[in-house]
Image 1: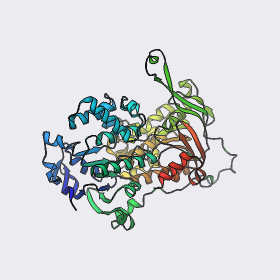
Image 2 (image 1 turned 180 degrees about the vertical axis):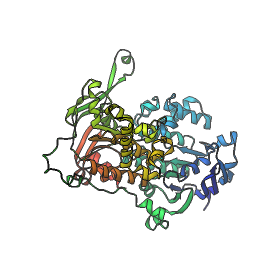
Image 3 (image 1 turned 30 degrees about the vertical axis):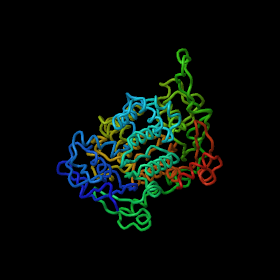
Image 4 (image 1 turned 135 degrees about the vertical axis):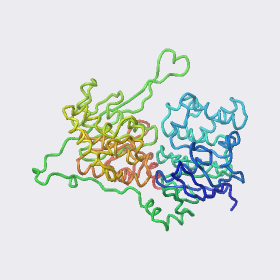
Length: 543
């Protein structure tokens, strides 16, 4: 096999700590190789080393691109390779894009630098690239800034930027993490199309084994900096040889539905009480935002963008309502409205009480509903200890507690999410540490403990596992199911992952363009979808 990229004996160390340990990989022109493993296994560092993007690291071994030693390049020679020969799609598009430049300017800048074209010529190519990624209204989106796009749209912009100079090798680091199932398929099809057009090789870094099965020719599995297994996808998936590979393949979320019969109650409790009222209800829920109008009309008035329109739902006690839809469908807006964190019209009730228009009047009601956000790293203050983060809600909702009582409630909440066992730390060590000292899965457990400590009835889960690898995702979902069983919690689950819906949801609500197009029990919606849009989502998740 003619090797376009040949990596031999790659080692990466920080000080005395070696994190990548003698990795051997190769890529042929036009080949698709998936590099999989849990967070911290060394996947991303392996890719970043090829572009000289790991400051302070000690790197040894060899990485040759068409005979050129990449690890020996410096200065202008290294910059010439970046983008033109080897390009990278980063996992988090918001940090990869410049917030002060329009997306069209950012893509055109790459084209101007790498192909020596004029800015006008580069902008035309940039718009064509945006269109090729499936971004609607590419000419208009080219004038937008990153914060004006959804997460999925930003990810497509980053992919367009990586393809701008037609690289020989594309390093795709979790390129579909922020995308829903149908868009994942579109992006994979796009990458495959560009690969065929240019003979481009793709190194796909991912924890999504469904993507690997669909996209890659070969798969390489990393554990703690060591390449433990590699081979053709069909062979490795059918008969994995290493225990770690078998563990990854066995990490698909398992359905363990919570029913009234499995909700833990005190053994001496009174006879069953009458059915409880819904934990949360919404009627005629709508959200819209002011937007500038084109031309001279925009000088005198502003238009309205309707993000959510006429949404009704009931979230029964001790059940999970899953809200699914593509990026931009209104899922996160629905979550914000349910939490009274964005102006809305219509009615939302939590624990039988309606949100008031007076913020002060809502303070006590907020104890009944809490939230766990998508990215635990950005949702936890880096300047606060675990004790301060988890206990912050108690300062508002239980101000009469002493410092010792508050600390005990924090410890109880952390124990309930199994964090002490997960990190093998004493309680005192645990509560005095900061978020950056924990892994992604451990940070999400801290976020869940923060929600639990005020003993809410409803928790809004906004993509709670999309930033986690498959094994940690399964652990967090199992934890959420256990907590629902033990505490009788109700979950409003926002996700684009149909596997998570299958594992967690009792009922499902499908959103498209801010409107509910289908709703029912999970068996009805996923087993026999009626709306064409739902059918598309379900079909895309089964590939």
